[in-house]
Length: 155
Image (cartoon, rainbow, N blue to C red; front, side, top):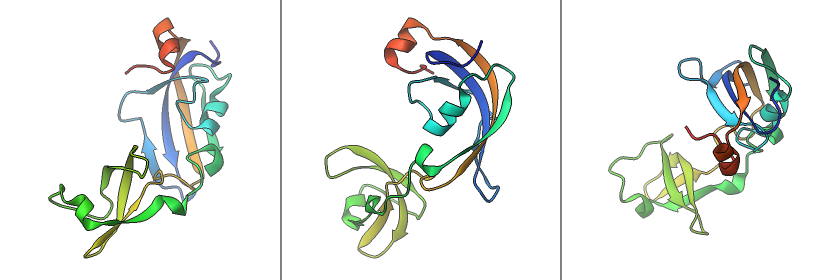
């Protein structure tokens, strides 16, 4: 069965940056399932999956625009240290959840800690990077009515 819209696909992957550093992967856990055609994975990878079948193994290079987007320096901001009063310890690289100016919850990474201010970055960690995926298709099946209704595979 070919990968087309509304198919559930499970795949293993290794994600490598342009310097050859492994950023993420699934080989040490279950294959990653998703509902094809419903924007559940980065666009460049989803497009490359189309028409593949179980057993196919391939590599795909995904530009930042088709991956996690370009880095947006407006997503880097200074926050008053008092905003982190609930945290007993803070460290650079720590990821925490905060509300943005519109009251929406978002994850941010702490990139710098000063006496009175903390620099946070709301960009995805892979934003601005060219991504290289090594993919192996493990399963392709028709989606259930519930999966189609939800627009995703429930884990």
